[in-house]
Length: 399
Image (cartoon, rainbow, N blue to C red; front, side, top):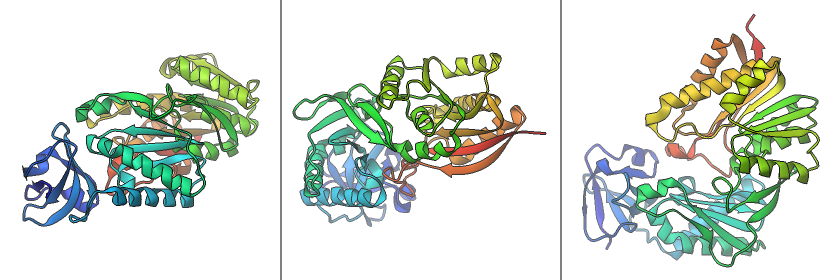
């Protein structure tokens, strides 16, 4: 018998609405023996069974739900079922050569991310309980892929995010099994990239913008394009591939810019695309002072906020880069702009963009609203799974 965690009366609203997290202040008591990372049964205040999840006394997210069936054993068969379901969904939803195979809570495997880059898997484990099950899940995943004729030649772990420390865990990265060259060639939307799974950001490459990169192409033919926070050049290279007259990519990371230049060479686009290393907040005013104007401006910043406490500063950052981007556009130019923080709600992001436009006397004509690619599914009631907001606007002078 596992230990039983009982909720306080009136608590567990998010869980009962379909979410997977129970916070420390929602629990009345835990009875029975357990260890951190172990599975406990969850009861409502009146004893009604709500499911099973893994517990961690070091985390504010005290329990993460694994199943709503309180009699379900969290065994090998259960984990294989979860993995098979995730894979079956990807086969229907997206090109699986490079994609996110497991997206944590949205695939009912909370705290675990697995990305596939050709024949290599990159895993990120962010919760103690799932970390203990990680080996079994990866074994089930490689078996599941093999059954469809897909051989995985190597796995790299990128569990080096700072959030692991909030779970009482050490940060870690390294090969799981035999070592291999961590620079992985991939192709997305017909564009070639070299992905560094060892030293690149997160798991090495941001797969969530796959179809948003494709969406900006139709605006880029013969255009002067500015791509801010270009990282390894993905939006810039899609713009160039679509026939842009010129593309300028900016990023503060020397490593990212070096990789972007390699990717441009891979695609034979070095003559069309220039990359500059620098602070976007400093370079945008400089470009404006120099009289530069663009037909398309793309803003793909990192998350300016990773907690509710820093939202005010994040709003200032989003407003600043967007108003600067709007000022650099020709009248009637295209602005593609996004936020990748789930703490920045769509409503707040829209309000911030409207404020930026008003401040520089521009009118926004919305062309399209998009979100993350379908291999990053949004699980309703699990708000952490919905994070990417992506808008394409025509920006007109207010006259």
